[in-house]
Structure formats: C-alpha cells, structure tokens
Length: 286
Image 1 (cartoon, rainbow, N blue to C red):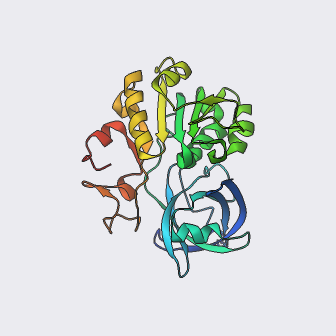
Image 2 (cartoon, rainbow, N blue to C red):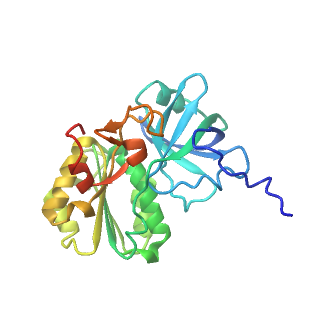
C-alpha cells in the first residue's frame, strides 16, 4: 500500500487553501507580482491550472477577487499573480510582505488553446497589465519551444515606468530562439529610446507580413482589445482564428452570481478565453 499523505488532491474549486507569499516584484508603481506557494503539501501539484485560467484570491476580513494566474503551469513549485492596485482588496494585497498569508481557490474558467496552437507561429499582442494573463501562455509556449513556430511578442504601455515584466521583455524572452519582442510606449519618455506610438495595423503588418499558419492572441484594456480584433481581421485572420481573454468583474467563479455574464455567457465559466467569432455573437455590452 502506498502512502498519499503528501499528494492531497484539490477537493473542490470552492474550497480555499492557505498560501504563503514567497516573493514580491514591483512591476510598476501600481502593479506588483506575487509569487506564492500553498502551505499544505500536495495542493499545488494537484491544482491543475492551465494557461489563461484564473483563481480566487482572498484576505480574511477584507474580501476576495478573481485574478488571472500569471505563471505557466510549466513553472513548477509556485503560482504567480500580477495585481494592479485598483480597490480595497488589491490595496490590502499590495501591503502584504514576504511570509504573509492569503487564501486561494480555483482554478476557474477555460484556457488558451495551447494544444491547437502547436506547430503554428504565435503573435502575442498586449497592452498594460493585459500582458499578465498572456504571460502564462507565452511561457508555456517558450517552455515547450520545439512544439511551436516563430514567436512575436508585441507590447505597449503608457510610459516606461508602466511597462510590466521588464526582466522578461528585455532579458529573458529575447534570448530564446526564434522569439522576437517588440515594445512601444504611447508617448515620449526620457528613460526610453525605442519605438513611440500605439500598436497600429501598419506596425503589426511589418512584424507579421503573412498570417499563414499564425495564431494571434491579444489582451489589454477593452478599447485596445476591440482595436486589435479589428486589426487582426484586416490582416486577413478569420474570426475563429483570433484569440483574446476578457477581464470582467468575476465574483463567484462558478457562474452563479450573475456578475460577469454577457448575454447568456458567463466570463468565469464560458471564458475568459474567447475567439472573435464567439465575441461577435455576444450582445454589445463589452
């Protein structure tokens, strides 16, 4: 008889587990990345998150909120969450220090089609903190590099100090074979001598002159997602080939509370990952 006392399975996505903050990275003045591990042995190994999924983070006496899992499941031994300071819960989380506790339940939602993307080129387009959910997929692809074609990562932010994951953008990712990082700022910045301007159709066509055997994936502010979905269509991608992930006000995570529904679709259950053909069928609420 084998002992399974250190390999406990995650019993329910509604059951929170205590986790400890092991590392904090200050990405921007208002965005931090928290690296955490579960206190109970076996929970992390059986958490089963896939690129693009979310988890519910909670602080006792404060509340809970749905946050995208920033790390790829290929990065073992920890989970990462990149969190913008935008409200009461996230403000309290931003005050946490290494060694402090939070509770985590999940994972929730669907995931990026990483299996269907194998053998294809990947065009990732992100803005601001929208790079956080895409990072889970980018690192999955790069950690399984031989399974995928050319990788282009296109990223924009308002200014240099608002760039997230500078250590990935300027150090780690460009060193990986056939991986090309393109960064732009919305405006001139004394700390920046690179490209200035929005992510435009012309620029995307320079980076990706042929759409053949390529999968475009985008995430960012809602207005940016809408613009990039249109850009991708003008480049020649079919709606069902265009992938995005929607960030809505998800509350319960299991499609019961009705806080994140668009029409008959619940972002927490049917999403957060959709293709453009699916989005075209949604009511114009997003």
